[in-house]
Length: 213
Image 1 (cartoon, one colour):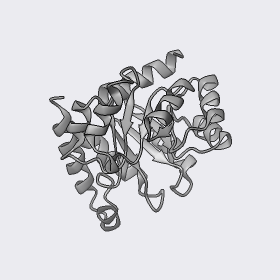
Image 2 (cartoon, rainbow, N blue to C red):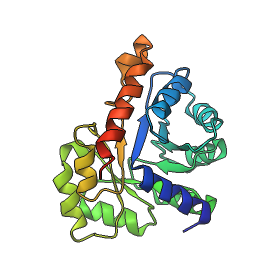
Image 3 (cartoon, helix red, strand yellow):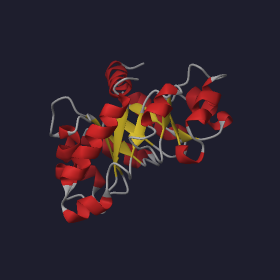
Image 4 (cartoon, rainbow, N blue to C red):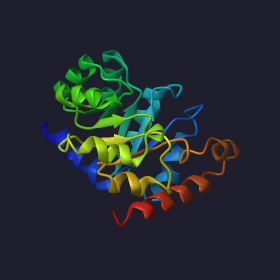
């Protein structure tokens, strides 16, 4: 694996939690990032569904420190190029797009395509995925992760969808390399109220929940 990508992948595995930042506007993202990091989360994925997402990624990357910032919902090469140029250290997609994966490899960026069935997961892994996003994990549960890894033991799986402080540890115990926490953690109602302390509290809770895994 590429040097910088190998370091990023190792951080994702060490931190074990990726916060999926999906908001109705980009203006609140600095406050969201501050709340999550105060709660102990160091890996964040800003999705391309956020208005002006590339600018938001660039702004988040300016925070420096030990944060690992990535881009989510990356569907095409043009979007991937823009995100990498903005500073994204990893790219996540709900699908397996070989052209995007090849671009990420050339640019030394971690690539995490999406899949669900064992066949899709194996295909993504053999196309060069650094991890495979299992989505929607909420439809399958932690036992599904263990079942898939029984024959595909070398694949690094990243369950996404429905992850909370109550089940994150179960997914990791089942063998997931890390988990993505989205709508539960990035509480849209709390953001609307300006109650970013809610996000910080949830971040602390999920970090604490996986600390013994």
